[in-house]
Image 1 (cartoon, rainbow, N blue to C red):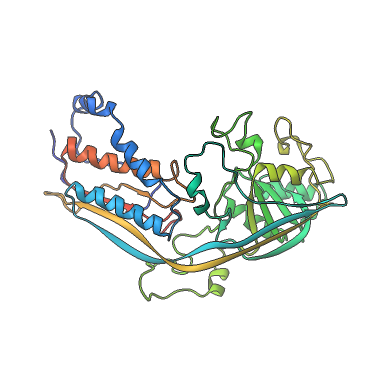
Image 2 (cartoon, rainbow, N blue to C red; image 1 turned 90 degrees about the horizontal axis):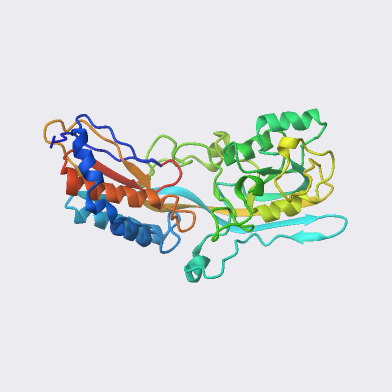
Amino acid sequence: MTKLTFFTFIVLATSISFIFLETPPKSFYHTLFISDSFSDNSSIANHLYTLTKRPHVAGSQANADAAAYVLSIFTSCNIPSHLTSYDVALTYPVSRSLTLKSSEKTIKFGLFQEIYDGDPYAEVANEVLPTFHAYARSGTATGPVVYANYGRVEDYATLREMGVNVSNTVVLARYGKIYRGDIVHNAHAVGAIGVLIFTDKKDYGGEKWFPDDKWMPPSGVQVGSVYDGIGDPTTPGWPSTGECERLSDEEVDEGGNVPLIPSLPISWADGDAIIRTIGGKVANVDWQGGKDSPIYRVGPGPAIANLSYEGQQVISTIQNVIAVIEGEEEPDRFVILGNHRDAWTFGAVDPNSGTASLLEVLFLQRTYLKCQGYIFHESNMHIHI
């Protein structure tokens, strides 16, 4: 078997990749994939189960516990490993509300995700944070609703051609096609005062849904960040450690990477309820919903939405886990392998299927390849830090 003689270095990434300077013959890899050990997934299953027993959002004690678990696996392989901590600016929701007032009635939305019957994690479901957008602007927006399809630049061009004025309105857009942060940015650029982003059944729904199928349930909400920069917004380009220099809130705003109007993610059930109150011109065919959906119109109004969001920014400690195997002959050469660990909720798919795979690859390399020259870096943050 050929010996690998370089470093492997793991950095923040959402996928796993290899760069091998020298490779064993194909017949060697073939023997690995027909090995009896590959028919037993107990180790990777145990990693995933352990990592996802409870929600572990960035900056939480649960996520620190997950870091400790990853470190314990690295060290159990007798690989030099350590934790590196950073103090980063994170945001969490304090309060949210959404009401819709029409001439007929006022709807107050619950903004919660339902627990399905038989959910084995129901006892810790209350540890999941309320649905929100990380780094969303705190504030209140009250105005008629305009439906803007996916919230792309070309969608607003279509609205202008239809004679729809978006200024001082609350935009309703659906997830898909572009990054959620760009949806909010584009809405602000055309004068909107708030944004609601819903998961349209056309794109993410089906006749059946989780737990009976893969599709998003009616109350399911896609959460995520609306920050479109790199790293900690308050420390762009340098590490968030100790008493490091930080940008002020005003400087962060001027950087253009954080939203300047409030936003909320909502479910396709809530989005459907809002769509049914919007009047005005009928939207184009490609803007319409799927089977059993109402006719999508663009507005504005006549119903008036009142969106309110208050978030809190805090400096929280996060941990990166790093393991190193140093090469013997070419220690200045690296292979990069990495995955983040924190999750918006339990994280079984995003990100901890990747974390479990990383730990299994580590086992594979130590048990089968017995290679030298690897550094493993299991990182904490979902955003790019």
